[in-house]
Amino acid sequence: MKPRIVVFSISALAGTLREIARDYAPHASIELVPKAYEEALAYARNRYFTDTVDVFVAAGSNGAFLQGQLEAPLVVIRTDGFDLMRALALARKNAPQVGLVTYETAFEELAQFSRAFDVTIPTRTYRTPEDARQAVRELAQLGVKAIVGPGLVNEIAQEFQLDSVLIYSRQGVMKAFDEAVRLAGAKAGGNARASRQTYTYHTEQDLLGSSAAAVQLRNTVRMCATVEFSVLIQGETGVGKELVAQSIHTASARAGKPFVAINCASLTESLLESELFGYEEGAFSGAVKGGRAGMFESAQGGTVFLDEIGDMPLAFQTRLLRILEEGTVRRIGSTAARRVDFRLLAASHVNLQQAVEQGRFREDLYYRLNELLVRIPPLRERVDDIESLAGHFLRTTPVRVSKAVFDEFLAESLPVFQTLPWPGNIRQLRNVCKRAAVMLSQEGDLRHWRDWFPDLLDVAVGSQARQAAGPPLTDQNPWAELVYRYRQVPPAERPDIVRQMLNLTGGEVGKAAKALGVSRSTVWRMSRSIAGV
Image (cartoon, rainbow, N blue to C red; front, side, top):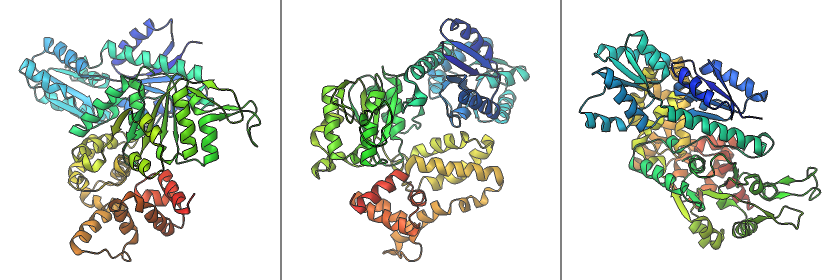
């Protein structure tokens, strides 16, 4: 059966999509559906869960909206600097005054174009259709005669009787269609719904930020994608280790093949063993009939991502090393070796070199994993990126708030946000932005925005006061005190703070994790270490 692909478009891009879709008719069944935003989301969910489609394709603000909400394979049509410069050059052939309207963020290549042609290109960004209309209106008032932008912007420009040029190129659309066909084929071949296989949609472009650290991170991801070596990804909780792993996989020669991920800290030893290595029928009580493939077998031809590998038991580390060296795996209850082909990416929030010195991690496995190293800096070392990250998180929430309101909130909050320690890093910032979007949709007065984040700002204010006043008074605000101490003490002392937080929350792991700005698995893992498990 040919891959079944649904493409969403209600704008001027639809004509280009329809034309290119005809070229793919021998290879895929491509259906163009004129829906967007909430209507497209409801339609996509119904089609996917009734198993009448394999992959979705969308572009622009519609693609960004669906990417944050849809629990199904989605390819977003992307543009790059070459597309931008081509479109601007085409627009300038017809009009001397050209403007650019893009979704969310501007292009760094715009400065290069301006220097090359000695022109100034006025630009605007948008999130909602109302934002896009206002952006076009402002450019028209500035005397702009031609607009470059996505399909929605092109339609609005025509309403204002302005020339318009699509920012998307034919090559960009074909690249998205090719990716959709690959995802659909890999999904069908791997029976994704019945296994632990997933297929990645994140690329290095999703690693946002313009700081030197962010640029270096994207460069490192590109380098790692060009070779087949194992990669060790190190970074604190919440910095985006799996996003980096997915980006490496998507840019590699194994893109379109399974990406199988497992968190080594979230499972008991017995469950971890069966998930990693698989088992034969009758291997233990409760084993399913016919046995089950482990993640190394499930990832055949693709990538295995072991998150929090520093928490893998030593006995499993020995077996993992043998699999990497021999390229074979034995299921639980079997004596037969099965050949496997996968690339290994591993991540840890702890310093594995120190774990080796303390005897908690095998030295030979550490060197086998550390063929390439990616260090993801914490958010407090990327203060310059907070603005772009927060702006992205605000504008991709499902809450319908105009770009102007988000910009006003950012102008008010950014100076404060840039002073916070962010113990939960980017994950914590994303959650803060979700709360802000909900509050902005309900309240129009920004004068009291600080009241929306007592758990965040009280900690920051408390830490400043403690630095000035000396020893902390833990009985006055024990929650804030524990959060502050969690960030200040050495990692070896953090489990004790987790224990204290669990006491305050009555043993509720979710509440403790939220208060400390870490994942549930981190709290669970540290509580295990306290208990000596």
